[in-house]
Length: 344
Image 1 (cartoon, rainbow, N blue to C red):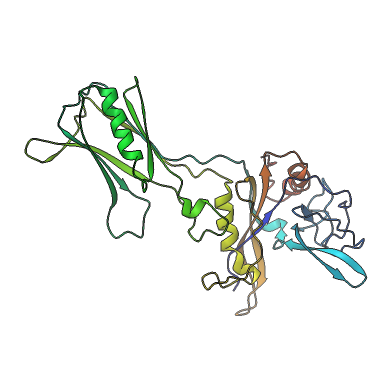
Image 2: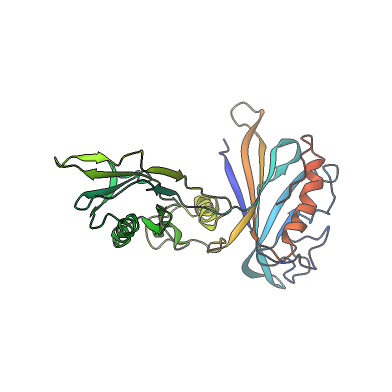
């Protein structure tokens, strides 16, 4: 039985090569002149030839999406023939969904404490306790607690002291900002360097998520909640965005086994270079489709779910996106699903 797999094509911000024209056999490279550039994406027909812009299902009931890589080799008398990654076949009658996802930036969680109406009591110990919710490996609550004994009844002085206390912690997972005159202490989650610093990060991309509690110690030594009548907390949740390089890297890494790389933990890991570019941002074109195959158990046709994802860098100065959509949109519109044109 076929398992659900995803084909991932990652392009570069380039123009369509002059040698890549309708009907050209880019896989065989009949001209042997590197017709397909490194990072160039092109739609192929059922015969593995370049699909003409405006072609429909009547011209080819099956398409493939191909991407040129940076690897070249010699074949017979041809030199510099480029290695090409080709998607699973996309059968027109089996396409379930066709969509475009424009890049949107990620944003870290923020929690702001408005202190308007509060008067700090000199000598009273105040506590900021942060409980982190994104560390699934921790058996209990992972927390950081910051304590400050008020030395002034002036709110701006108090707020600046809390800010300094939090930011002095080298292992903090948030950054504190107190703005004088606004009575607002803002806590902003920090990036997790273990998953956002390199293509070779072992940890998958995650973002800091937390709850924050503000307390003070009363005369009996007990923790009490800061009065809600004088303080309010407003939180904006973390947003992973769409098309960030960390997410694309994780998807590419998860699909390495489809390219024969099954060892990812015993070093050194022998694998192809990542096609994802660190710090790049991407628009995505996603095709959900089925693949029909003849079942060996009872000899009738079954379907397996597949997905094909095309990632193209943004902002773009090249014609890559326009060229790919000029091939895909008319073909998708001609399918039984009559899919609307995609724009990213």
